[in-house]
Length: 192
Image (tube, rainbow, N blue to C red; front, top):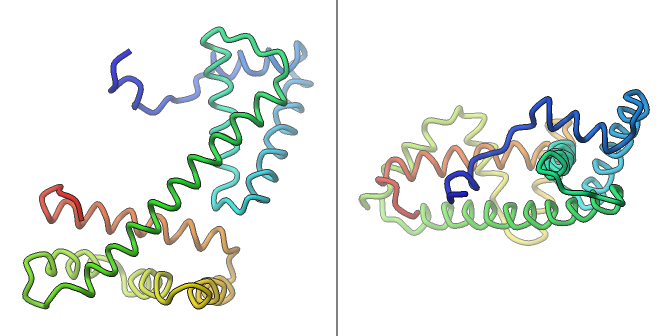
């Protein structure tokens, strides 16, 4: 398998989902109920770990399980195996979140350090300018402050928007990714 094939996002097929249901129970109704129970438990698990996208992470775990089953892997204790995959997905998600926060902090610090006439500043300003005023205000407020102040700011944003903190984190993550792509494109694909 080439590196490109490994990095390509695997998509759950009907065949893989069928293999997953067959592994859960020979009876389709029982298998479907067990699937939903596993998914609900995974969502709670990721919620306890304060993951921003608990349902998406639960789906990722079940998709990975389905893929392994489709590839012919024999799994004796599915519940234990699922939580093993869940811990791995949690670790990956945490690393992604840390990279995301670090990158946004870097972008903010980069913008603050640049003199108005620097060649990079038009990219940062231009990319921020492509956001709606609501999005721009949101992202700048979300990443403002340090330490405890930043935590309180994010809680305040969640209350103001009447959203769970995880939904606020997701929104910030999506906006930050858009800003990063925009800045990379503007700077010719190089590092920020």
